[in-house]
Each structure stands twice: as structure tokens, then as C-alpha cells.
Length: 389
Ligand SMILES: [Zn+2]
Ligand SMILES: [Zn+2]
Figure (cartoon, rainbow, N blue to C red):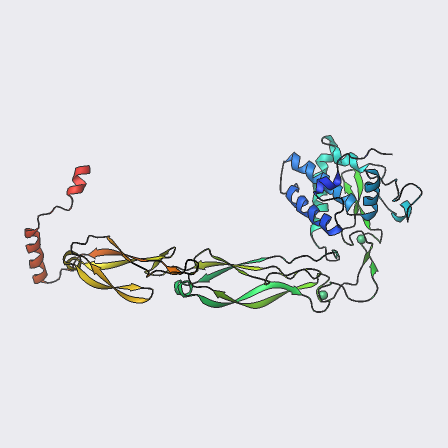
């Protein structure tokens, strides 16, 4: 009897001894993706882990092999399920098992050796078989549909006031021909991938070993594939989804529309649609959280003498009192003239920054007044600069 590998397959996949088929499959996929050599180039530890995961799945995904493993603590092709000489089907139920005299664990546990070097390509083949085009596979339990991500541009006012938008979302829906099952009535056909044996032979360098047929998942037979969805049970369709963007939405806000992601499999719930909002900037208003910032020009005399000026807010015009002696870039706060924050049930403020505009001098009278002003005020606006240069 060939030496079997020592590790605990259940532990390797992180599942309990009573784990169901689809639980094992999910655990395997998650781990295989994580440790796949393509995703971890040059990482020996990951490669080893990947091989162990492959091996564990090879055994535990096959009910006959699993039975042997559960009974003896290891698996060998030479032991029929139920023990030597016993058990339904015995070894005869597995024709074409292509170990070719090699022990699988031999391949798996080697760290040096020629087979490891040539192995990467073979792993890639196995990997791609497992993760692509599994349209004939019908997992036992329901599987939730995947979520969809969508980016949405809205303008400044839509974000402030909230808006209703219609999105054309490309999503997978349940196929109506087969009601999501992927197959239509009538008798099943023999799986062409494995000729009905339920397992396929993989070459890895000079090594040959056997895997559960990825196409029929070891069942050996395929159901009649639905002609509409080609077995997937779902179809890509573009659906118009009405979405309400609440008032006060900010750039980067993420909204969830429940049930509008891709349809689930085998009766599983649909995924969700996530919409990430991007708010286009406004020509004058700038948002900072719930506050609105705006720069407003004032004349020299308004700033110097003080004035009541009209400033724009998101509600329309508001009156701002500019006090006497206001300086350039001085800021004033208009309370609760900002954006409504629905969570706090409170509005932000508007911050007005005044920008003093020099007068246009195109008449003699203005020139006269400015000359007079310079005689009266002998202030040197550059005094501060000279003390620091
Ligand atoms: Zn269909
Ligand atoms: Zn097959």
C-alpha cells in the first residue's frame, strides 16, 4: 500500500468532518484562489499550501474517496469504499483512474525534484478548469448572487437636494426558460469530458494523476443544457433601476440597493447593487462636509466703511453684514445655511470669505479721491513683510 500523506484534509480546508459538499467546494475555492501560484509568484509556502488544498479537495469532493478517507484516515485507490472486498460498487466503480503507479502524495509532498519545476503550468491548467466554464455544474445548495458596483455622477444641486435617477444596470437575471436550473427536461447525457467516469487524468510533467471531473463534478452525466442560458441558469440583461439619492449626498457616498445585484443560483438570493456617488463641483459653491464655502468680492469702500451685502446661499440670497474695517480674506459664518445632514437632522453653515476688489480707475474724480486717501492714510501695507525679510 503506498504511503499516504499525513495531513488532515478537513483541517486543510477548514471545514468540519460533517461538512456538506457545497461547503467543501466553497472552502476549497476560497483557499485555492488565495494560494494560487499565479497570485503568489515565487511564494513557496503558498505553492505548498495550494497543493495541499488541491489534494484535500480531490479526496473530500469525491464521495467514494471521502468515504475511504473517513474510514482509514488516508486515501488510496487500492481500497474500495467500505473496505477491501466490501462496499457497494467496490473499486470497480472507478474505471480509468490514471495514477499510473504513482502515488499522488508523492507528487504533492516533494519540494525539490523535477516535478515541482514543471508543475506550475499544470497547476494553471487545473486551476482554469476549476474556475472557468463550469456551466454543467449544479451545486447542491443555493448560492447568493454577486454584488454589483456602479459609479454615478450627479451635479452639485442633485447632491444638495437629493434626486431620483434611472440607471441602466447590466445584471444577471434568472433564465425564464429553465427557471434558473440551467437544464431542461429529458434524460441526461454522458459527460464528454470524462466519458462518464467522473474523473479525468491530469499530466504534470512526467506525472499523471487523477482528478474529479470538473465538468460534471464527478457525477459522470450531464443534464440537458438549457438552450437559452447555456446551462448557467442566468442571463445578462440590462435593467433600468430607479434609485433615490437622498439629500446631502457627498462624493464617495455609497448607496445600497438591496436585491439588484446578480441573480443567485439554485434559488439563492440575488446580490445587492452598490452605487458610489461622485458629485461634480460647482462654479462658486464648494462643499466641505455639511458646510458650504464661497468667496464673495467686496469693494474697498464696503470693506472699509462696512456694509450690508447680499451673498448667495444654497437657499437663495441672504444678507451679510460686513463690519467696518473688514480685511481681505476675512471669513464670516452664516449659521445653518449649509447642507442638511439627515443623520444629525441638522444643517451645516455657510462660510463666506470676502475678497476685496481694487477699484477700477477710469475717471478723474476717482483718481482725485484715491490721491486724497493716500495722503490721509500713511499706512504701509508692506511693513509686516520688511520686518521678516
Ligand atoms: Zn436557462
Ligand atoms: Zn465528467
